Length: 245
Image (cartoon, rainbow, N blue to C red; front, side, top):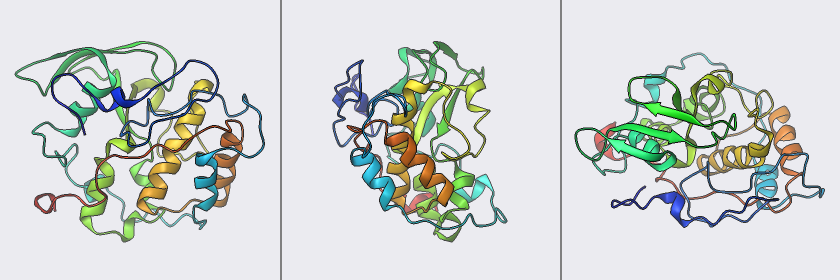
């Protein structure tokens, strides 16, 4: 997922600050992987690769939440990529700037979330204070109700720790999301909505999760406004190593 010596997944991306931009495939970073435009801002009726992927998602009704528990997705922040650092710290190192560690090169003690994708503000992270969350872009409860309840343990653990589905964000803004999907919650930062929805589509397509009719319509509405939006890819395999289950 990451390279030691300071290189990160985000380093393979080339970003611009205007319009919808193209994203280099193979990235494991949904937060830095695609354009930063509003779903209503770029014009164009058809959308790009992300819109096409959204159109291909299976539509079903939401299954009951019965039986959902966070533990069904394994121990939080398991080191499924076997780099000897837990997943939470991997994502903090990937997404924060000015990162400092404590007790080695895994535990992030400090960093700055510059232009938080959900709120647009800068947020300072200090270990032990809950100003930065690691968000599951596709919430685990949402995944449970759209296919994950029928998976084996290894696939659920993989989803919970896949960098493609994880993003460091402002905690207070993230708490308003809950387990919402595109139909019920979008980032207040309108400039990030295309990127956010494309990441949700990518995760659902990768893991074979379905969407509701309202969710699919909301995805297509956002993505129709960014016709050059590509689909993030990469991340970890969809099956966690055997030692985790």
